[in-house]
Image 1 (cartoon, rainbow, N blue to C red):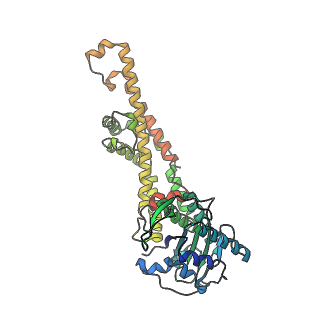
Image 2 (image 1 turned 180 degrees about the vertical axis):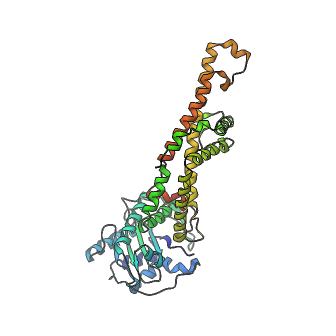
Image 3 (image 1 turned 90 degrees about the horizontal axis):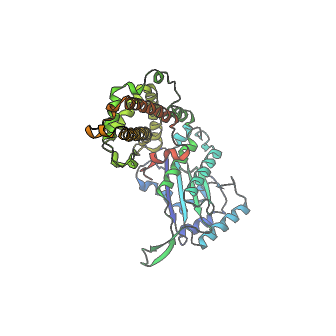
Length: 415
């Protein structure tokens, strides 16, 4: 299955012919072409038509209408001003970033964005997508106040696509030494490579803007927040399960002596992690089994959408596992917090016991559950507190919003 959305990105230096060609292209007349090019192959080389950005844009028949962050269509004066800004960027040795976002037309049609009969798209929605995506990209790179960009929508291939060109008229990027492979001479250039997270955010924005999954994702939010009835919890306490009691005590025994490390992400708690995870599993299965089943169904649905969007070879299934791992981590930290509180209480009891009866302490070893009824009560209260804290965590837990919700899911996708 070919991906529904493909992102290609590169940059060119200020001395390249490609930079000059684009500057000259800016004030040309606009026209939308309808030349059909077969772009169905998975071979990267077959996509080089989009990498050969400037030669491609220089063909009048292939041009799309230029737009910017503020203008849907540029007047002659606006084009002149834009060209001057690009020329200034070139004079100041700014790199030019070139991005191409290509779409499967059938997928766009399913989103009610592409209309096959007229071979047109909802240009307003496409422009809105580009603007929000580029705002995210520039913010991620710290260039929101220094960079300008222009874009054009193209209809001329079998896959509708958008070209975006970005420069800094007054560069803010750090400078670095680069070796010219042709001359063998070292020279300084502004760093042009973007952060991997920026590219991930770029792709996620495109998906979020064009695909309306609001209802489906709202349902996932509801399930992860735990907007459910808690009658079963009110009737049955986690403290009544002998298995939970055993796991809680054993987990504490396997934790490191340094309580500052009692956090789920620390490797030093690996020996205790199986006990912690099993407590989480018992809680979720006992009190939220139906909601978990629905959550898995909803996440599976989202995974199928991602599979269609990004293709068979992408790590589309990472989305679901990321969400479930996050829930497990949050629940695990709740368990550890209660273990820490319980351990502190037991130490306080021990201190009190020493003061009350030092002689008895020297004659026998101190055992928390054998100390007196106070210790027994404390343990039960700890498990009750734990149950309340886990319920609150399940209720409050919600997926990351906007582009952040895809950051981890997107990690490792092929560009």
